Amino acid sequence: MSKHNKAIPPETVDEQSADPIKKLSILQDAQLLENNTDDTDQPSTEIIAETKSDERFVYENGVFESRSNGLYYVHLNKNKSSKPSTEHAVFICSPIEVIAKTRDAHSTSWGVLIRWFDADGVMHQHSIAIDSFLGDTREYRKYLASKGLTITPNAKHRHYLDIYLQQPIKTRALLVNNLGWNDEQYVLHNSSLGVNNDEIIVYQSSTNISKAPSQRGTLVQWRDEICRPIAEQSRLVFSLCCAFSGQLLEPLGFDGGGFHLLGSSSIGKSITMCLAASIWGNPRQIVRSWRQTDNALEGTAREHNDSILLLDEIGQLESNIAVKTAYMLANGVSKSRSSVSGTNQKSHTWRLIFLSNGEQSIKQHVAYESKEVTAGVEVRVAHIEADAGFGHGIFDSLVMADSGAAQADKIKELVSHYHGTAGIAWLEYITTDKAETTAKANSLIKKFMLQYNDLSSQPHRVAKRFALVAAAGEMATLAGITGWQEGQATSAVKVCLHNWLDNYGRDSEHEDRQIINNVKAFIEKHGSSRFQPCYEKRSAVFEDKISNRSGYHNRDTNEFYFYTSNFEKDVCSPFSKRKVLQVLMNAELLDTSKNEPGRMAYKLPQSCIKHRPRVYVIKGDILSYEPNKSTNIN
Image (cartoon, rainbow, N blue to C red; front, side, top):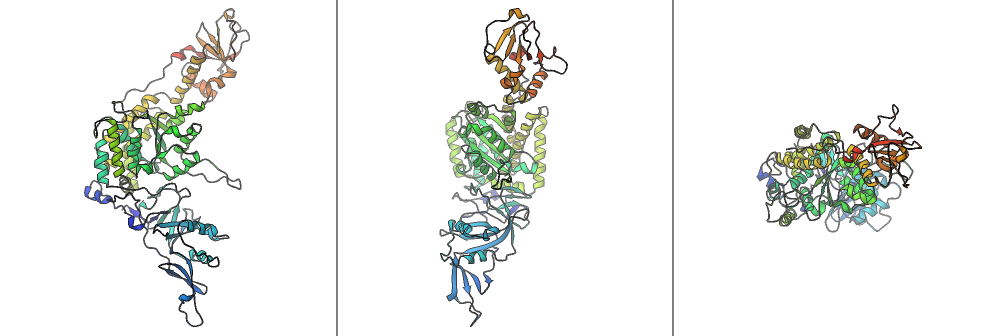
């Protein structure tokens, strides 16, 4: 049975403000109402079971005692009595508790898990590495002090804290540095869900970018006031489905990837972000900005492993790192770094779905740096037009107000009151039986893809990501979370997929079309300035000299002769010359009929050009070439 397992956050709120999430019983509103009734916008926190160290720990000629006002070391009076004397008690620190010995999945990186409260009553928990007690121990004590632990000012007594924290304890805890799936359990900031093997799981990361998501209102309120009314809004439903989909990546063995909603500033793109964020917490805390360095974004990605990352306004991202950042997020691997000794450090990894928006596409954004965007980026980040096409911007219709602006304001107001409950309900549902979750998702994806079996490899790959999103939405509906009818999630996702296919293409490989368009654009732009006119007979060659010449234009045959030496520099980037020539030949736009066997280059006859250069012969038909277009799919 799915339940919250014993898991410990690095830091949480006061225990009294915690509101543990109860198990969701699918489709039962009364039980959904129990899910969360907190209206304080505080993080939900589940405190571990009371696993305390011994209250008295004997060491040499004394004993450590945990008292209400702190930890003491009491020297034993052996001359008269074995009973400890309080007159010899030495203050060590404010109250502190040793919870467990920690280690990672490889039984390395051992540490000790401790818990304490600061002067404001806020609880802190942290795993201190065992090697912190070797040599100079000031660093870990400085860390504890910065988090509110009061430590004795007497330098002679501070070493007692080192000794106390290394006391023998049988309880073990697994230390993980990534949120998301850990075998059968899904790790959150402050708990884990799934098959409970009675092991404490401790999430602790060096980044600690975000705290546990907050909750406000009930799941029923979120579902009935927000989710159900927008069931016919394609872009809004799609965004909500995206927010459910990240948790399915690992069970299905899918790679991560992204979606980018493209449109003007007044179209309402931010509403999709607010809605998607409301599943997991307060949108003001969940939605992130593209305005980060690529190093900072690595840490952000790790914080959203096996989940959704929402990034607002791509125009804020430095254009010179946009392409590699998109690759990094989708591929799920940080860049390699060297340690002080020169050896390679272990790269960080993650899996996630990211949803972005902006007034520009990635291709338009990097154009400021005069860089090309390869098809690989456009496959990893599928661009969707944010305008639904019905005159209401992002909305397909007006169902909550009389105008698009008023409807957007209404949704923003609602998500500020109701958020953070649907995500926990979703996790409860999918972690109850991970194998069954995987089987159900696979079945839905297979059914979705039946309509798209004719897609070529790249569009097919992206369509499967859309299928994943649709499956997540349908499963959340089955769980009673969304309030939608069966099939509504799939319909919305298909609308967005078809929009992407209309712009990307369905039958022809995108890279092939990009290559042909690059050559076509070069000729259209430089046809008269970089190609010297010529005819079949050399006597008709124009005598005008052309600087920076790329080749010749045969006016008789309407062929463009590219110098082999300039061809790669002029039109091939970012592809190889071999790739470009092969694509042109497959499209019957490269004339090799007069060439020597096995050669793509042609040596012009003297009758045409006196010095007989070697050229690639591109047919003039390229100027009217149209690739296969995607067909409208109903």
